[in-house]
Every structure is written in C-alpha cells, then in structure tokens.
Length: 210
Image (tube, rainbow, N blue to C red; front, side, top):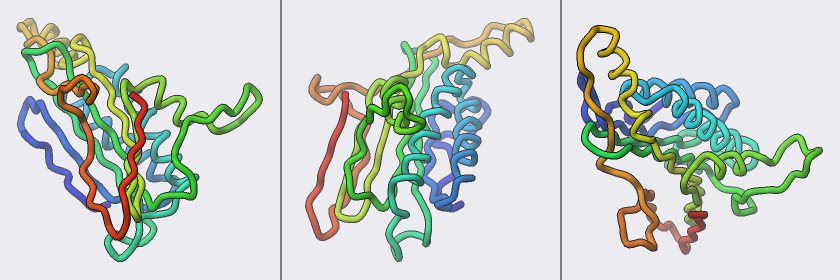
C-alpha cells in the first residue's frame, strides 16, 4: 500500500483526517480499506453505527471497481492497482460532521449507475446501497480514470461519542460534538465536497446524484 497515511492534525483528539492510498487490484483490498477507514473514524470519536455505514459504502465502491472496471493506468500508477481516498472533519462546537469516500480506477465501457437487478437478482445492488446510505454521491471521469465518490453526513450525536462515553466512565465532563465542514448541494451556493482532476488528452465528464 502506498500513499498518505498522516492525519491533518495528529494528536490525542484529532478533528480532521485524510487518506490517499493506492491499493492492489485484488479482493482483499476491500477488507483492508474497511479496516483502515474504521481506524481513522474511531480516532475522531465517530460512533460505531456511522462507522458501519461508512464501511459498507467503501466496500461497495471498491468491490464495484474491482468487478466492473480496469486497474489504474500505468506508468502513472503501480501496475494492477486502484486508488482509495477518504477525508472527514468533525468539531466540538457545531451541529455534526461529514465524511467523503472516493474510489478511482481505470474506467469501464459504461458509466457507473444504480441498477435494478430485480427481486431475484444476486448482484447489481452496490450503488443502490451507496445511494441509500450517502447524502450525495456521483462520478468524475477524465480520459484515463473514473472516480466514484460518496458523502456521508455524521450526526452531532454520533461525533465524539466515544470521547463522551469515556469521559462519563471516568466521571469527567466530555466535550460536545459537531462540525465546521458539512458538504452542501452546489446548486445552493454553499461549499461542495468534490475531487479535482486534470484532463489528459481528452474532455471531462461529471455525473452526480444529489
């Protein structure tokens, strides 16, 4: 695994974290990504219920990349690899927090979309699960890669809960929870969580479900 493994603000009580990693294009990458994301969210004091949702989202995005897309192009990336990234922000003085997860691959012949496999279908539900759990999700495409991203809102009561419960057990007051960086609908004029891309020898396509 290669990439950035350092939080924005390492310390006893971090409030921001970001990871950009290149993982092998193999099935075990799903569990590795889940584990590493869970460790980061626990360091922010995110409740296990939200961590479970985040783990399901990253599992579906990575699984879809491995099942339906090609590895990242070389030589700009290691052979047979896929890019996985996440970033999260929480704060002790606001109404909540947010988490963005993205997976980048070498693209496929079709645009990622929510499928309707029917009641008897055994597959095709991955992006439907992502759509159900995430407040926003979408795709970014350039000449050589495709990135699928999703943003999960972290409710105030689920941010910093671990620290509050630890403080309660120790008989001390724990800080309240919140955020300063919630993603918003770009049509509303607020900040938007998105990923920058450089276009290589071609145009740029973007699709999103908000």
